[in-house]
Image (cartoon, rainbow, N blue to C red; front, side):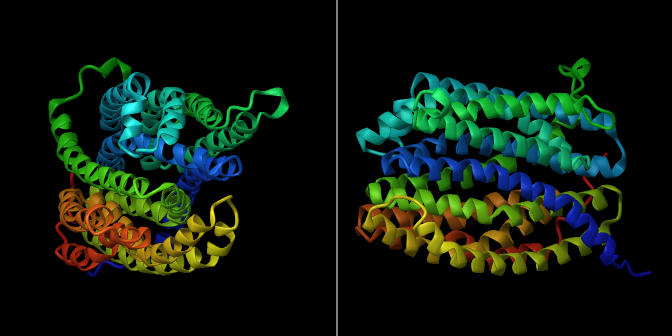
Length: 449
């Protein structure tokens, strides 16, 4: 008997899972947007320095993402199987990994922020502002890893609304304190970039507190502290098998993206400022595909873990097709908001021209970004096919896009827009390769024991 998709059930589950995750992604992106808009009303240099400084957390997030994604891949399948004890052990593994990473990045921000900023800019003024920001924001990096583990477990155990609520509260808090400390409202000192760092730290403390409080409720998965030091070796091996390729892919992507920012940061303040604004818009528009990508991994993983391999395969095919629709919609949104974005912040005439060109280039990039996010990070990862992402990034980003951008910026001295276009090549260029891998169906497998 042929397996068929119940479209009503499919779209109900897709909506139920993806909307809260998309909202959560939107809330997180709005923090960067609020920083850019508020600091953009103070001075272009303040906005640009903070944008460059936050690349440190971006790299940290790549490590955290690899651990929480590995936990989500295994967790979705064990949740589909109904094994809560193993989920608690997976939670413990994520906390171990993310806790160590958070401590290391916190120490780096406190001990050598000037060295970190020197990676992204050779402008002394930007380095000074960014270093001061990192010393305060570093405390938030210490907390982030733990809260992200809680939020990851909430996603795969059908507590996505709670995760979205927590992220929303954290973002609202962040934006409120942003305005107070950046501009010095209600008698508070005017701290500008440092105010954004303090607001972020306060918001992260509130986020973690909400995670712990809500997870104390019924039907929530919590870390098994009694087994914190005795996770089964077999599960550690399964976790590492998923985590290491994801970490390789995350670092390839994260360091690659950070390299793009560093390259643009060395092309002058105007190019760096325009790139900072374009990055905020990109992250905001990507929220829909992030939500559907996460939902794809959970839905496909649930079915595969429950032994419904054929239904999981058909879910993956349908979700891949949906990704193209989201991609073209995202292209239209980027073009539609360009006029408002260009006139929404204080920029020099040169920076404004760069921003217009970057928005047009980004509109094409969005098609590849949406398709690859849903197909690779959703469907393929949901079935445990995590190595492909690393392979594709090594070839398309590190062997093509980054060398071209470096050569264009420092050898051939191309315009900032030509260099920016090079940084957008990888996502669009690898679509045919991604579709070829998808149709091999190596991702259709049950990972549970």
